[in-house]
Length: 122
Length: 110
Image 1 (tube, rainbow over the protein chains, first blue to last red):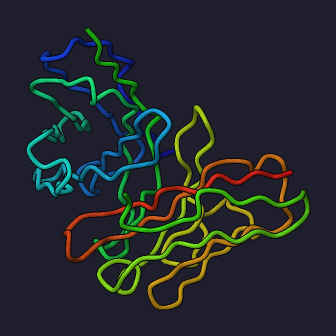
Image 2 (image 1 turned 60 degrees about the vertical axis):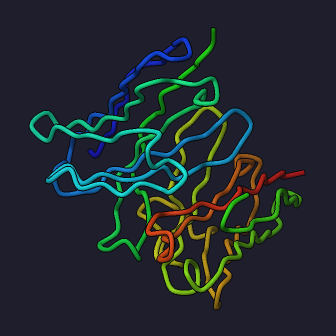
Image 3 (image 1 turned 90 degrees about the horizontal axis):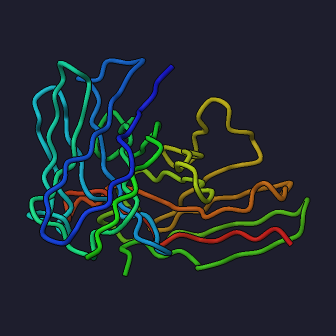
């Protein structure tokens, strides 16, 4: 069974750093892109970017380029989303998801993590 | 403001049919495949349709997808109260070099 399990909720202050995780199981983790999706309170889904754990190749949405960093450790089937200096506007639910398509054109996320709620408040 | 345009809300009675549209451009919907997701509050989004009209295993045939030009449509027949959720379309945008989602549509089953 394919599963993506994310790390728990975080409460941070503005300016702090944070790294959240997404651990895959039940499939060849290195061979599928992992995407990150943001949902701010009361808003819709936003595509942040994707990372290929096999070689850590990344594609960032222009809206998130330079704001966050993706990484992966294929040896432990985990992907990470990192901030160096959080802002209040980073408060959101963050989902990881497995990219199921054979090419970028065949875009879909077939399995999703349960989400990690990040709250940034002074 | 989302690259893909969806109606903010739709509604229909139990047992009826509803369609949700997703409008884009040649750089996204027009030349790439569309997927659809159901998002219930407090849960992870669920893939309903991929490659414009394919259903993953376990998704009932009450859900269907289609695409024409730069627009895609999700259809849901035999509406149930359990279908009340937010629905999102998604695709790749070749100009952005990134994926995009629609703004989401809230379905109310009256």
